[in-house]
Structure formats: structure tokens, C-alpha cells
Image 1 (cartoon, rainbow, N blue to C red):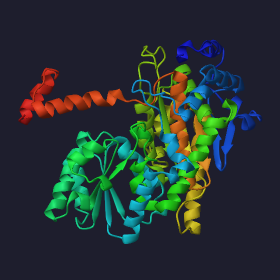
Image 2: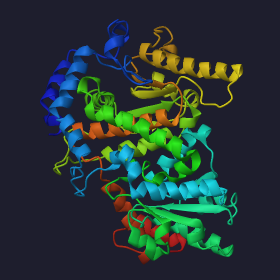
Image 3: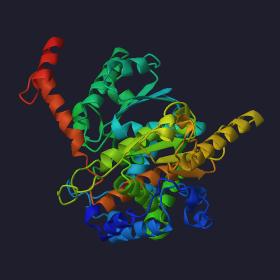
Image 4: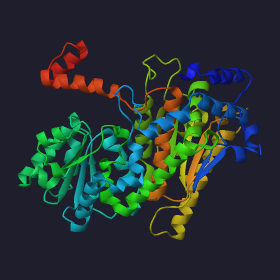
Amino acid sequence: MQLAKNPITKTLNEKLKYKDFKNINKLLSDEDRLNDFQFNLGDLNVDITRQSLDKEIKDDLIKLAKKSNIKEKIKAMNSGSKINFSENRSVDHLNLRKVERFNTQEWEKLFTFTNNILTSKKFEYIVNVGIGGSDLGPMMINQALKDFHQGPEIFYVSNIDPTNMSDVLEKCNPLKTLFIVTTKSFGTLETLENAKVAKNWLSVANKSINDSMVAITSSIDKAIKWGFNNQNIFYFSENIGGRYSLWSSVAMPILLSIGENSFKDFLYGARMMDEHFINEDVENNIPIILALLRIWNRNFLNRNSHCIIPYSSRLAKLPSWAQQLEMESNGKGVDIEGKELIMAASPLIWGEVGTNAQHSFFQFLHQGLEVIPLDILLPLQSSNKQMTKEKTKKHNYLITNALAQADSLAKGSADLINKNKNFPGGRPSTIISWQKNTPFSIGKLIALYENITIASGFIWNINSFDQWGVELGKKLALKIETNKDDDELTPASKLLLKQYGY
């Protein structure tokens, strides 16, 4: 059942005819709001008191989720049912966060290899070659958990632009460098072209690919054909989408950075969020509540984008990762039955680290005509290893900035004489806070965002686990490269290629 067909959708639209959420100051003063609009899971606190809804609408949104059979859909996913209908696959990434994984051959091979790398100190540089989920996820976690880094220096190459690889190779020694080639299909053009560059660079130093390269893929046969020995290939299931894959062997750069114990803590944090998502009632289920807020803002209040502001420089890559997660998962035009959507799915996700964002686009958030909901992500303590009074003071300043922005966006500041200084307010935000950036807390946070995306897709009744839209342009690019011409190209594209010398 699409969102438009959900009977509660009509109820919500009817109530919007006489409810106005442009000014939410009256709602903010409601003493019961603190109890009804805050949620906790361990040290994770989710505060939605500044969102544009009241208790009545919140209760209706919960009914909306229940009518969509969301709990049954979560149960089906967790049980291994083939809910990825267009590819006839199950969705298996939650299994990677279960303790049973540590008894599998996949884990034993991955851990033995990474542990040998760390103890032997054979390599001083690790270069991860991948793109999309094979790049954004592990790179984000490496940066988020930099304070726990104990292994070799790690670089990431994703872009086929030759300067990307060149800049990295300049910093590395071919005798001390391990390349991790990550491609689920082992057919991704950008990744394989960059892998060829790495292979040639190693060969000049008389290093073979199986001395200094490993492959992470679902397509073992293709990796063997490319030249990898079986012991240098690390498998992950084709039932794990790239944007959900950072828990799999795709996490090799994370393991090589933070080690086994911290990586296990990372998985334990994610599992805590999964257990909550699977077992908690809708009324207090944090991923479902935040998914409902996205849908409320996107489909009922016509707020078409969603901004994410982490007040932690360690989480600077999270908005880019969340952008791929949501928009590749839920950027769909049809439901699970192939019928065109009546109401749109997925907001546009964007963002930047605070406080930089305040001096960039917060003017737009405060006074622009469009109202943009945002998530403010806030660790309450710095993860810096050596804290001083001065560093503590600066982190306190970070917290006060985050809270001041959230309150001023919500409350506004009226100036009817000088309209340039008038702030209308009513700008919604959610504050997600936790004690400190640790492997456990970051695992919990990342699983939260994954489960928000999945819950949203379940309510929209779309398939959040395929990405056919990624493939079309890739196929045409390959045709151009191999044929140098193609009838599917527009005249303008053919002209530009001709001018370029193709």
C-alpha cells in the first residue's frame, strides 16, 4: 500500500486544513512536550521537540506507520525473506552485526588477514580503491574513529579522474603499500581502471598483485580472471547492497585502522540499534519515529530536502554518506509492485559540518523562503585523546552553538520595522546527541540512519534495496568508450566527443 493509499494520509491532510505549524513557539512551551518528544537508547538521545507537529499529529503518524504494516515488514527483512523484489534477494546486512558472525569462515579469514597485517607491520600504507558504498562508508568511519587509529596510513581513491590516484601514489612507497580493490560486481569501470593503474605502479617495483593487492567482491570468478589468487579475495554476499556494506569485508580498511576489539564494539553498537528497531513498539521506536518525521516534512509539509549538520569534525563525511544511503535507496518513482508513486519518496539529503555550515548556508536556513528540516548531530564530549581546559572550553562552545542554532531556527526573532532583521522561525530540527565518539556510539548512530532509510521505504512501500538508476548511465558510458559512437547519444554529446578527438 502506497503512502497515498494509506487511510491515515487522508486524516493528516484533513487536519492540516486547520492546523498551522509555521509558528511553533506555543508548542515549545508545552511542559509535556519534553516527555512526549524525546527518546533514548543508552546514551543516545533524540530530541524532536523543535519539529513542526503536535501530539495529535504525532499519534496519527504512529497510526500511519502501523497501517503500513511496518513491523511485519521489519520482521520479514530480519527473517531473511526476499524483500528486494526486483532482484529476488533477501537483505542480509543486519546479519553482519550479530555475534554469530564471529564463528563464520568469512570472519575468520578477514580477521586472520587483517591481524597479520597489523602485527607484521609489512605495510605502511593502505589504499582503498572503490566508489560509492565501497568508498564512502569505510572512509567516513575511518575519519569518525580517527582517535582509535592504530594501523597503517590509509588513503582512498574513488574518482576515475587520474589526479585522484596520482596524488595518493605520490605519498606511498610501492614496497610498503597494500591496495584493497573493492567492487561488488567486479565490473565497476572507475574501480577497475584505477586498479590497473595500481597494478602497473606495483609492477615497476617488481611487486605482483598478489603480493600487494586484495579484492573484496561478490564476484569471485571475475576477480580470479583479473589475476587474484583465491586467498587474496574476500567475499561479501550479493544480498548486501553497497551502501549497506560497510559492515562486511568492505570494512577491511576500518579493521586495519582500529583493530579487532574496537571493530567488534562498532558492530555491537549497531546491533543494539538493530535490536531496538526490530523489537521496540512503534510508539518508542527511534528509527521509525525519525522516518515518520521525514515523511511528514516531505509529503505533508512539502519540504523537499533534509539537511544534516554534524557538530563534530570527525563526522564531516557523514552527510555525503547519508546522501547516498537515502537517495540511492529511496530515490524511486514506483512502488514494490511497479506502480507509479502518487506521492514522492525521498527528500534531497545534504549538509556540512558545524560550525562551518553556520558561516555558509545557515542564512538560507534562517531567512530563505523554503523551510528545510535538519538533523543536528552532537557528541557531548570531545573524542580528543588529550583534553585540556582550552579544548574543553572550545567543545563547550561547539555545544552552545548547536543549541543556539536549533532554538533560533525554531523560535525566530520578529522585527517588523526592519524586515532584513526579521527571522520568521518555525524552522524544524532534531537534535541527536550522545556522550562521545567511540566505536560503539558511532556503530549505533550509523545503524540508526540505515534503519531510518529502511523504515521510510517500508512506509512509502518502495524497494530501498535496488539501484537500477545507477546502472543506465554506466552502461551508456561503456558503450561510448568501446564503440566511440552510439546511436543513443544526443547530437550535442557526439559533437563534444568529436571536438575532444574521439
